[in-house]
Length: 387
Image 1 (cartoon, rainbow, N blue to C red):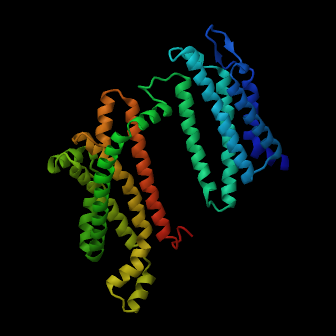
Image 2: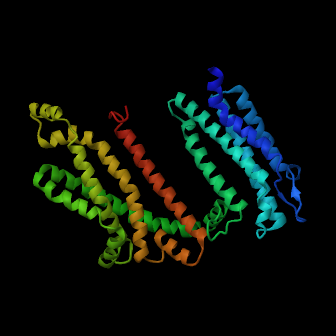
Image 3: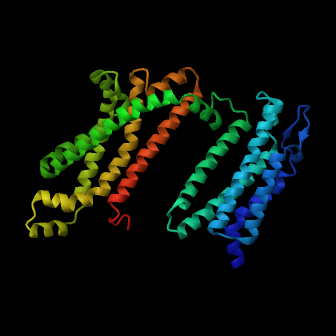
């Protein structure tokens, strides 16, 4: 039974070692004369193979799941990942970008497959270590960080290794180069779209939705009139609302902020009303027995209980606001903004710049969402959803 459990835990390491050994039997590419290149022709790949194979063999034999073995496996994965990139770059240097057959050495791809199993085991070991440490500290961040880095690595290796044209899908390396060369342009686009349009529309839309929710809670007949209207407005397509807002408020950031307000108002309204109604009748009766007014009950009992619902609306609106502002810029904007940059550069077939802009939008949206999640944890740590 113990051997069976050990196999279940370490089979990814064993499979990684098996694929590493199989990869040795296949060539890694072609020379300028068309001859197959063996592993001895690429020292970087051979060194990466040795490090990764030793790590896979050691993990298969020791079956350790502590933090130290996780860091060791992580280091081996980083060293092993360097080898295929060096081999592919060498093939580009020898054969050029117009000779994709030279980049299809089966030995390299079998090695990458084995490296995937080693990464799998590394993620499992780090997850167990983070669980024993109650997911606190940098250990808990290693798992999502490594998983994201592995996806980007597969993207880089696959695109460069198979010679995918950049007009279809550029490699992360080329996107990063364009990003570094266009920081001023991307910074101006970020300021126009995120700082002006997204934040202003988000604050006004969520704030007005919250205040109207308090009014609806106080005046019950408004609930029967506003909520159906909210469902109707929420179903309106953004591509239909954005041109109207541009006609009403002009081509600058005000029209994009208006689109954001429309998209964020009703999610906040509905979630806040739901949260206010989540207070139990016993709690409300207790406050009435103390002679508390409506405002006192609202501030001291009902709003604290509604905080998870309010933050849920804020997190949903953080993504809706960014999407709404970018799409709205497709229908008219000054010569700046993320949506303007995407629509303009895609017309020029400058796909690297489009992906760089998408990366800025993705990172800014993720950080915005993360800040709201941290604020939620800091203010609702007492709520049963966190306990």
